[in-house]
Amino acid sequence: MIGIMEQQNENKSLEENYHHYTLFDITVDPGLKDDVGNELPRPFNKNQMRKWLKKVRWEKHKSEKRIKEKARAKERKREARAANIDLGPNRKMLKKMKLEKVKSNVGIILDLSFDHLMIEKDRYKVIKQLLRCYSINRRSESPLQFHVTSFGEKIKVDISRHNGYEHWDIEYHEESYIDVFPKEKLVYLTSESENVIESFEDNKLYIIGGLVDHNQHKGLCYKLAVKHGIQHAQLPLDKYVNMKTRKVLTIDHVFEIVLRICEGMQWEEALLKVLPLRKGAHLCQSLSNSTSSLDTS
Ligand SMILES: C[S@@+](CC[C@H](N)C(=O)[O-])C[C@H]1O[C@@H](n2cnc3c(N)ncnc32)[C@H](O)[C@@H]1O
Image (cartoon, rainbow, N blue to C red):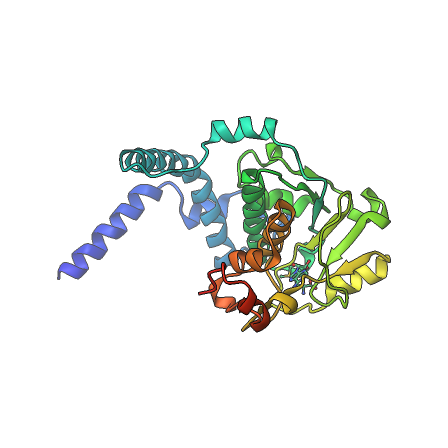
């Protein structure tokens, strides 16, 4: 009995929140659009209508949610301050630091030319990883020069969920890297390359493929590098760490490894710091004997 009443209350609160948007409203809406903005043919099926309804609700509640999140963050900061916990630089300080920081001469390019190969969920994963790259770069003492290429319409729509992305310290290019930068300065990072990188050179630009593909397009970036006649290289994972899983890393992990090396960290330390536990990375035997200062646990 209590269970039924709880369910009824929950339904009631859902109705109160969303009573002005029903599936009927959607049927009289001028039109539904797919991910790319094309009109969907009528009659709309239930799934399309549900998806649209979800979008409308999201738009409506985005700002309210943001206000609540801000209040929660403020409260957490107040509690941390009271407990004497160091929270790192705040937004104001980060802005000031941005003006004072000297950028690294190493550039990184996130190649976003793979939209057509990913479903919506994976495209959002790419954006999430892009966000993480931006965030760690912003907090670095010597940030990399961060470029995004093939920044097309689809990705613009996806990323516009994140307010203010235009003002982030990233250079967005609609064109492909091959049309923007001199070929001889480009190096495509790819786990399939036979070349192993040891250091990142000033004035070179290292490309990361903006692709979340669950290994469906194995070797694609390598093939692209060969096709365009540009240099390519893999990270020296085999040399420094033994890994339980395959050597294909996520975009943000590759980005962070490049950043840490450019900041002056040693490969062993950078790899162990960045690679997640589930990748099971541990130092190669010969290194772990000679590197007693690293905590490899
Ligand atoms: C999830 S992977 C995409 C894998 C994709 N099948 C491909 O062809 O590259 C994302 C990107 O991270 C970079 N990457 C991942 N693991 C790497 C490694 N071990 N060495 C160099 N780059 C790597 C590559 O640029 C790659 O395109």
